[in-house]
Image (cartoon, rainbow over all chains, first blue to last red; front, side):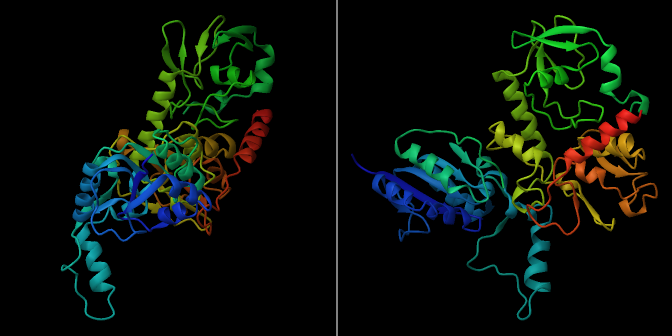
Length: 175
Length: 251
């Protein structure tokens, strides 16, 4: 049997969900037996490949680049899982949502700068007006909340997906 | 707000009430006239999820989480404010009810800024716990992300409107148990907001006794003790219920 093609991607989040994924302990060996990790911050691949079976998406959509990457992921993935509160509710990144973007950038890069106060515009993606959850941009097949999600819940959900089953996690909490 | 005399004082009144029976999920449940469906169900050891209910305070049916199907037609009614009647038939759990309850939780989560990860009540919040037990893993309604004020004026307590669900437990505990009535809900619909006295900062509410019952009655992190960090605010709802029971006995 060929292995399941598994990918992960990190949008506007703190990488805590990826840490929780690594925190599966010996469970990670079971995952490795059944899946090839084909893309994500944990591997070297430069471009998101075609024909991915399962992608775990961490983080909210905060920039035009996030939105574009998410759309590529959706187009090339069979089952898309929103991993963690940022991808589901906006969570901490959404705490900027009540303040206009220009005002935040000015506060951080001009008023908050010790030297060379300038709002960066080259090589960084423009921010969207608000950080918003994935399902407002693309279809999400499964939501796994938590900040970060409990490793056991990740293991259960991923384990089921590797067996070809989409199982909603039970008794998982936000936060 | 009904007058204080309307406050339920179970121990005194229920003795005189007539014994009747209702059916919950088809099973006969003995109860007494004057009780609500919620009381009858809980007396019989059956759980109906609630949020705005707090033992000892009179019920207002604010959150609608306790909706049940009554009669043969499956009409929806809040269990906390619907009185029992002889022969009443009630369904307290069904796919339809679960769907509505989940929808209510989702609307509460979408309405203001409930960011559990950075909340003082994370892990001890009734809204968060209900979302988990009802299987809410995402919110289908667009998050509003409204800009809400935080009242830090009071020396010992914080009021964070971002986390307020307008259940009015603070309003009722202050009016009915402390006997003061500092709090009220101002405005209508989406513009409803908790206010102290005539919409002034908490510290300027002269009638406030600083007793903190409102803080302990609050089901979320909307009211908290100052100095508490994330996950540190454990509410003493049991103490509030005890104080309410004592007050009820006095009346």
